[in-house]
Image 1 (spheres, one colour):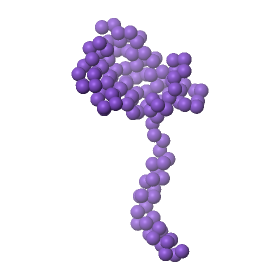
Image 2 (cartoon, rainbow, N blue to C red):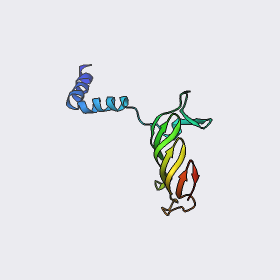
Image 3 (spheres, rainbow, N blue to C red):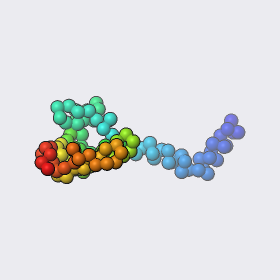
Image 4 (cartoon, rainbow, N blue to C red):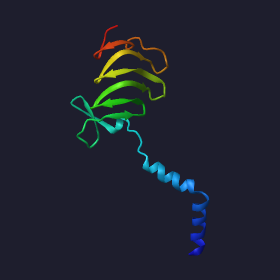
Length: 122
C-alpha cells in the first residue's frame, strides 16, 4: 500500500497546480450559449427555468440578454468562423447600424443597413 500512496502524495506536493487547477476550473461556471436557451413567446429562458434570461452568451452568437430579450452589442459567426453580422439590439429588436457578411467574408448588402425598432430604414 505504501508503494502506491507515496507516488501519489509526491505528485500532489510537487505539482499542486495540477490538482488545484482542475478543481478551480470545475468551480468556475462557463457562459451559456444559444443552445442553452429556449425561446417561449418571444422571450429567451435558460433550459428548465421559468425566469427570463439576463446575462451574456458566448459561442457562435455573442451578446447580452436583459429580461429574456437581446439587448446591447451583438455579433454572430458562420460555422466556418467567419463573421456573419454585428450590430446592436434594443429591447429584443435590431437598432442602429448593422453589417452582415456572407460566408466568404463579402458584405451582404441585402441585410446591411440601419434599423429602427427591428425594421430596416436605410
